[in-house]
Length: 222
Image (cartoon, rainbow, N blue to C red; front, side):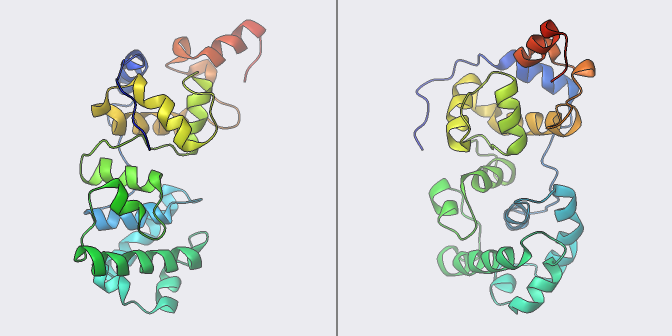
């Protein structure tokens, strides 16, 4: 994925405002090491972080390493994950991913985009989550459904494809804050700027939102 040639930090006022509203914004998946975050992020596809967090403590206690997951009985692994959406496919992906970690990376999670996205079940979004939160590497911006929705409402991107949205966001914010940016947008999306019936009346960044301003002028809510 090509990178922007420069960063203008044009979005810094927005980022600063959100940081004041959510000073504790962070990844809400529970993890204690890079492998746990990688597995949890794979599980989070089409599933809430809260749902994932109800499953992973037992999962990681039973399978504490990539080698354990790689050699797990698939039926037993599926049983642990059965409360998660698409648990059968996710169990297969997690096992194949961990087998690759054992075979190619000595059981360790790699720290490059190319190596991560070569693993089963790992796309660019998952890789960005792991790099940013497990290793402190700001390789890109995590674009999930919340980030995509807020990017449109805040006038940051007109694109609909996650990678194109990411390319629009990168030049607007300092690279060192890309991981934080994702957390702030996700927290705001979960707590205020809902997909349906966003709480514009109480929105802390209403003055920075062109969609809210347009709705206000029209005398209606979003």
